[in-house]
Image (cartoon, rainbow over all chains, first blue to last red; front, top):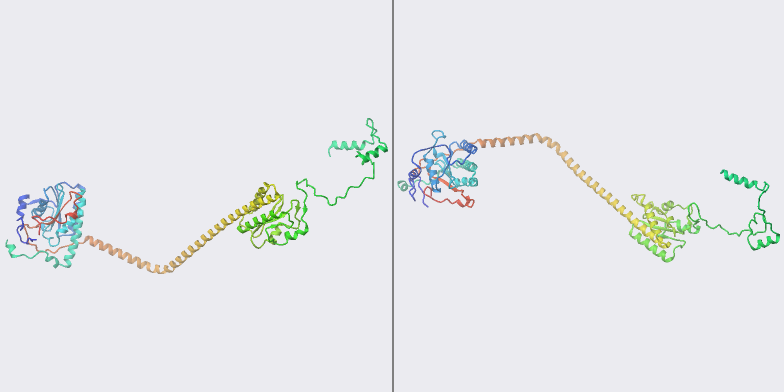
Length: 192
Length: 341
């Protein structure tokens, strides 16, 4: 299995870069609110509940924030790329100035192809595995299946909160465990 | 006396004194005729008119025969001969059929005795039959109640019956003092009446006595049943009383134990309450602090990849299109161009 180096500019298998995503979704900066329900999945009351859950999350993890995007994207691979692209290109207008998207966690839902994805910024990358984000989505799966999107979002954030609290405590007790999370840069890969 | 009777009597007395005006003259008999009639046949008015004076005196019949008591309809009675009194009334009889006069024939006596013995073996209440003749009278000095108290005060409970052969309606029943008092007082007389009624339907005196005894034994069996039910009730109430006493004892022992613990409980009540309150407060504060707690992560340096300034696509995707595609089957994420491998 080939590993992408920390400083790799493109995927060593397919050569994918953010520029490819820019070509697909647009290269300019996108101004969004943290809860961008472009698909119109949430009613007013549900929207308030979800926003309250997002606020609670921010209170508990002052460094982090969660964002939600709902909309039709085409296919699952696009959803994954879209998450990467949105975290890099979006400007969340309801975030305090100076906030970095590297501290963001994006939950993307495509109601047409009925797929959900979760992407995290660089800040959480050492502390979260792909399986962790999968567990959060799995917790929301049954609610999404029934069309109860608000409940599914809140459940996913609850699971994420529980997980991050645990990881925060672990990082506090064993900081070295997470510093070696990513492999050290290899000179030849950096050169590539 | 009524006026017409007075008048009749007065006329009768005055009649000879008054001159006969229109009367039929009495027949006049010659001496020869008188003798002939006296020897041949009864002469009306001979005695009154003072005819013959050599009439024979009435024969001596000895003791007057029993005569019927017109008031009660009973035949006149003779007392039981003195020589049998001891056999009847002196001691508690050793057999259930007391017939010292031999009023019953041998086979009947044997059958009835067998019946009484069989009853005695089955029943806790014995039955003694004193057999008298129909026209016999029990001497006044012998009283059934006295006999039962004197001879049947001890031993098994018993019923005594004075039975007059051929006259079951004259039978008298006495209960021994040892008969349980729990049997209602009305029961023995009712049993006697029932037996008399049954005996009256038979014609033969021996058969009457047989029916009498059979019916009486049935009624005695009924008395036994009543005794059993009473005993069972008493036993049940005894048992419930014992149970209640046991429970009371248990509860009293529990209450005694609680009473012993009460001073200790009073001593520990305030510290215990304080401890529990303290724990509740601590738990509440811990919960509140946990809810209010904030968590931070060390900001580790992560080199940007794929040209991304803030993120490089670490994340999972899940499909919720069908219930047939559960999360468990999607755990292995499909590698694509943005996946870190």
